Length: 258
Image (tube, rainbow, N blue to C red; front, side):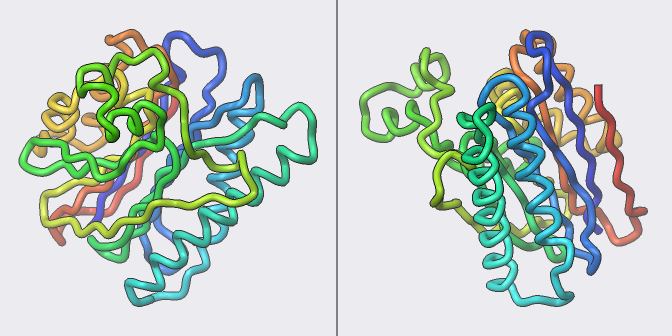
């Protein structure tokens, strides 16, 4: 049984929440979670993230039941590329949207197994035994500098250009998404988030809070939001959590916004 929750907060600085987040079950029983973090200025960022999320959700909702693993991977990749085309066409057709784009991180699961797809710096983590393991690699300038040895690990988190993306959804006609398999063992959790969470809450705290199995999933999500707000809340904050619980668990999806 996969139990899910998602939550979003505008933060303490922004006047608009440019994140879009959704998690739930498709028509034929696949678990789908999507977080998109928009960019591009007033109204453009939230338009980009909303278009990306809606396009992907609509594309994947009608997936046939019991598809093989490779078909799930292909479907998730195709949905991301369709979202890219949708956002790019909208940005190209309206001057007020010409700079817009969005990150995306998504999970598509059949039971406890499936795939993660992402573009940009929204992340996926595996929460296991109270520790957070990052599953995605940021498409950012500072990550490229780090991989090439030009900056240190310490500089990576504090670099003045850490928010400069090298890849985004909707900014170019063609884009490549990173895809990776995931398989949740009993008690493990998949956490998706925008950088409003990962930039303000340490890896250690992500693992410890998300991994408190004794408290409800929605309370863990709320605690993560509170940690980001206490750290300054300098960006919109979004989180989606997918936990592999025992078969006796009652399926439930909760959501709330602020």
